[in-house]
Amino acid sequence: MSEIARRKRSKGILYKRIIFLLIIIISLIFIKKYYDNSLLAVSAENPVGIDIEVPVGSSTSKIANILKSNGLIRNETVFKIAVKRSGLEGKLKAGSYALNTSMSVNEIIDVLSKGGRNNNVIRFTIPEGYELGQIAEKLSKEGIVDKERFLALTSDKGNFQDKYPFLMELEEGQSLEGFLYPSTYEIFIGTKEEEIIEKMLDEFIKVFESDVKPNIGSLDFTLNEIVTLASIIEREAKLDEERELISAVFHNRLKVNMPLQSCATVQYILGERKEVLTDKDTQIESVYNTYINLGLPPAPIASPGKNSLIATVKPADVDYLFFRTKEDGTGAHTFTRTYEEHLRAAPKK
Image (tube, rainbow, N blue to C red; front, side, top):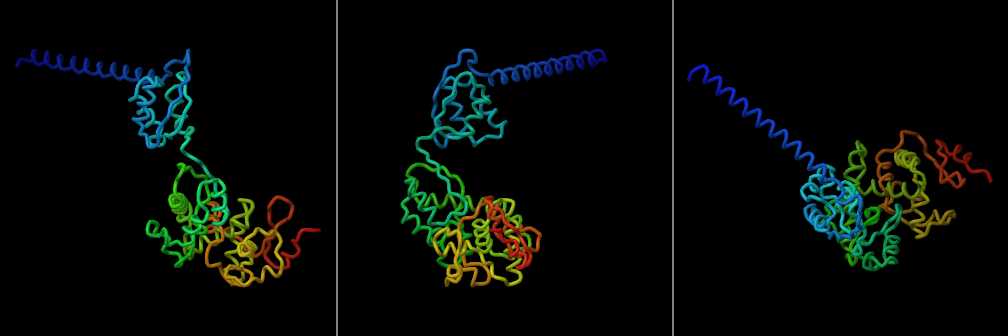
């Protein structure tokens, strides 16, 4: 092949490459424009309200199909790409939604990620510091569980330890007191007691593994001891900023073999939240009475929340041995090192 022919061939290849590159660039510009246009509202100027129902378990593809068939989005594929780019893949929620054609794709995604009405779903909240009896009573009053069945199931960890191996660390016959995590839950109407209990155990595991276990460090406590102390802290603390201080007091007492003397443990024995305990109350014969027994009670006295669980494994670095309420309505406590300071800290009458 002559030099001229080679040059012509090289030029031809170059032109083809340039043309190919231009086609790619033009295509990308077209695709980008098409994508952006598909994100826009279907009818911003003349909005029409449309109610839709997203069934439980719907995939992003299924939701895209529902929206497209109702005239709420321009393109199903663009919707799926936008969901993935938003980081909400698998997080769009079932329910009833009142949408309209003036909403952009991103606005629709935002609404769907927050959840809509679902007439088949009910929500309940278990406050931090609730005992098993209180949980059962609350759920029973709300028509969610049969109280006696719920209590029977939670009275023995053996009913659930096959599915939850961590329960094998507890004593034989120990109840689930302290291990039903206090939070807000959504369930379907008619959900069985077993499933509700498992949902709460699942949440406990999640919080413990992500927020508590990484902070245990050199603390030589069993799982049961961590949750037991956390439950006492939960019942004693009124302010989040004091949880680590209260934890430190109890840790310091345990180190010097001093009774914890927690009013919360006596209240647990009494079965009531008695504000002022009598001397007779503090002398009740019970393994849960930390006024007459050294160390921790044999099991938790309530369901601790995340902050109390973390405070248990991360006590404040202080040498306090006492605390008492300020009785000023704030729920705050005065912390002291000696018994004499503790007495002087008594609120003035």
